[in-house]
Structure formats: structure tokens, C-alpha cells
Length: 240
Image 1: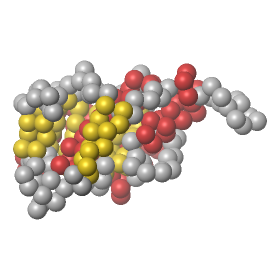
Image 2: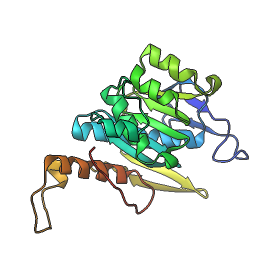
Image 3: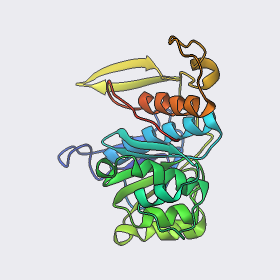
Image 4: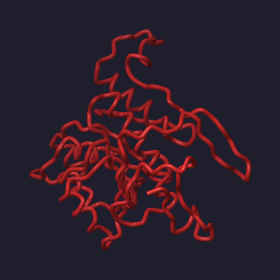
């Protein structure tokens, strides 16, 4: 697919609208269900970058819940305690994979802000994760792939109109990006700053320099998440 026609742009009066690659190449995505719009795809591409970086930095499955082109929540796939299951409205006997735990944590960070979210998963969407998403109010999802049963579950949401997008995990964008505002083109290098404990957490400027590995992990989650907010922001992290 070389281009994808959108229903409209940011607003219904903004037509025509489409996405395409400037060099005429194939788009790195496949629309498996639904018809995502302009804002949907902005959420999709920003959230995918976030979870991809979290996975690369920590080695753990990651999920994000995006709303209005910023993360409402992001998390790693760490096991849930009984208390956390209650917090996130998950039945005690519900089957949870690491990826499902990641999404439960991301969605549960701020359920009000996540209402009607766009979801990003770092790994192939499995059935336990799809079953969690099945019962949430959400606009769509992006992931590197979907198990057949998981795809069937997700495709049944919103009377069959739920947006399901698959992205090529090996896609690498051009290092220089462009954006037009008011007919004027802005050009800059992509924000490809690598964030991990080895590069970012060496110089502790506090008197207490005793930091646990779990605290370092949470700091990395915060730094990567803040990279994909739209302005100066505050990020709270705890337990992955």
C-alpha cells in the first residue's frame, strides 16, 4: 500500500486527506480492520515509537495508552499482584500474559484520561491482551502483529469498525523529518536520542547515590514516556 486515504483530516472540513511516503515507497503499515483517521494515526505512530523504545531499553514487553497525541499511560509487562488486579478491574482468575499485564498497567495509570484511547503494543498481540482490550472503550490499536484469534476478537469491537493496524517492526524512518505549518516547511533531525540506564543514569547529583535497579528501570520508563509528550510534562512512575 503506497498511500491510504483518510475520511478527513483533523476536522471534517479538512479534505482531501491521506498518508503516503514522500519517496513513493510502500507504507510500513497494514490496516487490518476499521478505517483510522488523521488523529488516530498520529496517536498510532507516536505510541508505537514509545513502546518500541521501552522494549529496547528494558527487554520487557511494553504497552501504551494514548489520547490526544500524548501518553495517558505506559507500562512494562510485570506480573500483577492481587491488589493490582483489583485496581485495574481484572478478575482474579483471568489469564494474563506479560503483554496483557503491560496493557492493564498502562490503561490503569489514568483510566479517565485513557477513555477512548489508542493502544500500542511492543509485541504481537496475543489472546489474553485482546480479551482485556475487548471490554475497554478504545478507538484502535497498533502492534507488530496479531494472533489470529486475537485479531478476530479485536475486529469484533465497535460493531466491526474497531481500528486495527499492523506495523513493520523493522521499519526505520528517514533521519530528517519535515512538517508544514501555514504553508511553511520545518525541517529537523529526528529525536533519536537513546535513553537507557547506561547512557542516562551515570551522574547522580544528589547526596544519596544509592539507587535500586527497579528505581533505575522506572526512571527510564519516565524519560522515554516524556519524550513523546507534546509539552513540558510531569510523569509519575511506580513498579513498572
